Length: 142
Image 1 (cartoon, rainbow, N blue to C red):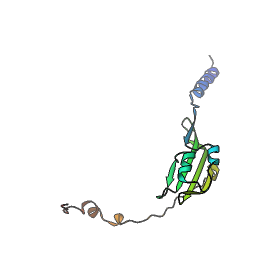
Image 2: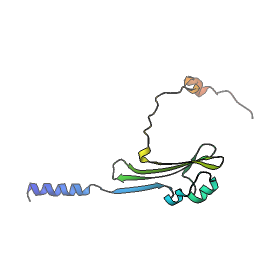
Image 3: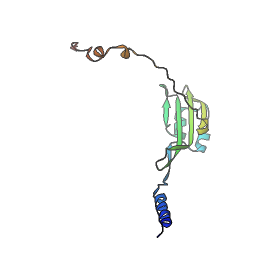
């Protein structure tokens, strides 16, 4: 067996050992297009819940923003996961009735820049001993 043949055999074995596993993960609970088409402004939360089901998440303390979302993520062996598709349906309620319906996709995504400003707190201004030993000796009998 020549060196050349041995080289080709080793190369073939090496390349064959590389993983080419491809996984597509589908996450979320985006309703069907037919169900989304049934939603109109003026419907109540109960009606929307009966048609679409429970939202992926709600925002705000008043539960007036419902979000349905789904995404498809491609994973190949050890490579970084890549989001292939994203769908978001946001429904806003005013006085328990639908006031706004928005549909978004991955193309609508914005890159968010992180602000470098730091907010100082009172905790940072305390010294080491006051912070860790400041409560020594104080006792409440409640």
